[in-house]
Length: 476
Image (cartoon, rainbow, N blue to C red; front, side, top):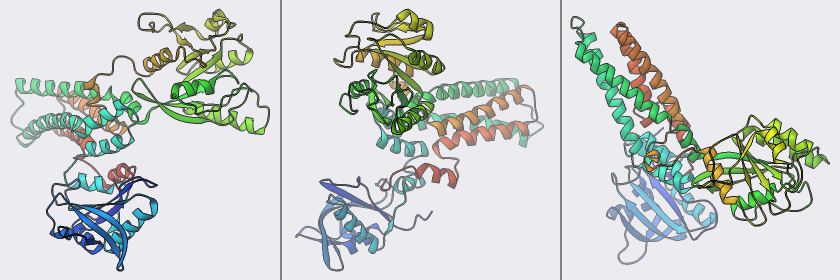
């Protein structure tokens, strides 16, 4: 990857809008802007003549013709996002206006940026470490306030500080070990050996604490997939609309209305939950419904838990019993819909089929787990929906969501690196206790140090960077 060229991209979403921003970064950003920008007004000037962090008014021109009326923000290195010279051109929104300005700066010497290339330059130039760079993407993709807070904590360097301290502690142990390799006649003093044991044990405890945040971190970042299932006309689409707070799915008394899966994300007690409304599970009546049922089963394969909707105004039938048994291995909540109508559902039979426990009573609206949770709702009036949200939160995330937890929620890449670091650290500790040759001890310890360094990018490869930054949008 070249860092001596100048890159440009549209930094705002493509589409209609009041304004669009075209961002340039690189050693020739000011020169490219000079060739593209015509100052207007007595106090306006060329970008290369402007002081840092100032805004200029004028026009973008190409081949002597005006492209758009713009404002140009000049930011000189190193006080910029990339620690390079940066120019941001604000033009009128809309696909054509933004593209015309971008084409003008590309024609004047800039290169179209790759996905995530601005943030990659920020990392390579020491503006951000790798964990902070990933937090930028998490910030953009946040779907709840909790996810946003977690991303901001990571961007502020809270996770990085702890990872760097862990790496420093392991490096100190490695320095002691290598010192004794260099001077083999000097035995490690008993008190020093005990200190090394203590440091390695503390490192293992700390890694375990971080690894315990992995599942919660992944839930906040990508959401948890939840399939809404049940036989036709049980109220699945009505339940989806209630959970979303708007009419998203078509609701009809005619069984089999939903022919395809519908996916929407809702904020449930601060957690992003991806609800999948499925076609009613039954023997299909035609080819289209058959495809809908097939897609429903496909969605069930990727769902992490299910909401099984039952019609409380009708007794259990063979299809209900079949599906209760079929999905017994899945995390699930049974949703008794239509509780405003006379109860026809045999709760004793339901207990035999699924081992349910009601979550409608108790001080907090929830009882201790005693089997499969069940909530009664009326999708017509919204009764019971808040209790259902509580039950979903309890099933997905046990316990309170604390601020300090949000500071260090690791992602799957961090989890993989820390698992490798933990294994190597444990092997180091075992080897030291067994009086193994110090060369072998040092090998495992170096593996642990390098794996921990991967989290913040102090140990990295070009392939790893390609994998991370390719997931960013162009312009970021």
